[in-house]
Length: 99
Image (cartoon, rainbow, N blue to C red; front, side, top):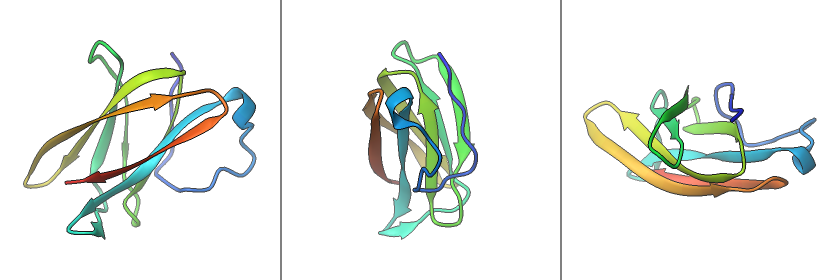
């Protein structure tokens, strides 16, 4: 499995979506973006694959292999939040995570 991402951002200029599966989204608390939360990408067995921090707008992004994934979101003073997401080659799976 191949995954990796820089700190968030919602545009994908220069990315050939025909060859990529993208998972991206935003983490919010009370409707406001959460900066500096950590989003972990777990495979279908729950194994850790990657982790990125959210940016100033609460955004994050992963380039992942196609398939089913779990996003585990960690933020200060909040219990971890798990969110299921399916990634498909040529598609951007957009997720909004409320913590």
